[in-house]
Length: 378
Image 1 (cartoon, rainbow, N blue to C red):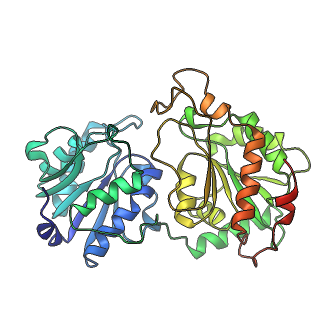
Image 2 (image 1 turned 120 degrees about the vertical axis):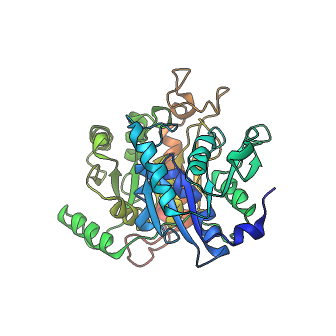
Image 3 (image 1 turned 45 degrees about the vertical axis):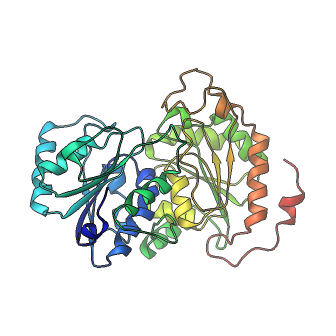
């Protein structure tokens, strides 16, 4: 059982979140709770290279350390990095560490690292008895008792350390310099002043979470001009995919392909200023949730706990007997949980959510009621 009064004395705290950017974003309400419990508390985030990229945009984090741990899915790993990380953590003299994991991950490798670094208080969810590796632990009950949303799971964890967050929104702070550079790029591509847009993110790191490119293109063609310019986003490796999807939209759909051309800060500003995000269930969904941008989420049923958090949204999926497989590649080779979502239903969800939220676009005054969206069929 955790001793909240002891944790209240911890002023130099290591926050371990070693998986993906979206997982770090879903942990930000818990990070804020730790900071609010002691505003003078210093928080260091230990994250993968992907997650560490969020550091400059997280107001509650004082320092970020990048580490691609060998017990998390990453590229080739140098063994010397593990010993170097233990030495770095020991030099930092942390009072405490909180290890954030999804329920399919074990906290014990990270807990052993914290022990070797001499960190006296270590908190995590754990399925088996950790004995001396954790000073404080919450017994793992998921998925047997039903999974919680990932943000809720981490909030429940830090409550054991006396940290609470009454307004647990995801957190990401956009920066003025990124918005200026984004607007310069868009103007250079011919975007008219005052033009509105939606963002369409058609990629995902896991093949099992990608809506078929043909379906994506058909959906955007049906949406047409009614959501403004369609901004296609992705990293440089997804340029062939965005080019394929953009080519299916037809001459009547205004499309701007920005794959590989935006920094993380610029992408965040693009999403924050958008009327809506249409995306596979991947990092930009959680970025949109942090920024308050409505989301139509093409939600592959690989797992149930990563839905958009506290933001207007629509979840689109086709129910299948093999749901919650937790696989990066469809084990049944049919991908029906997404393939069964029709382009017509995507169009309807986008227009319905636009009509409901009526967001201003790109910093211009709020648009007139979208009666055109309400009346036009897909």
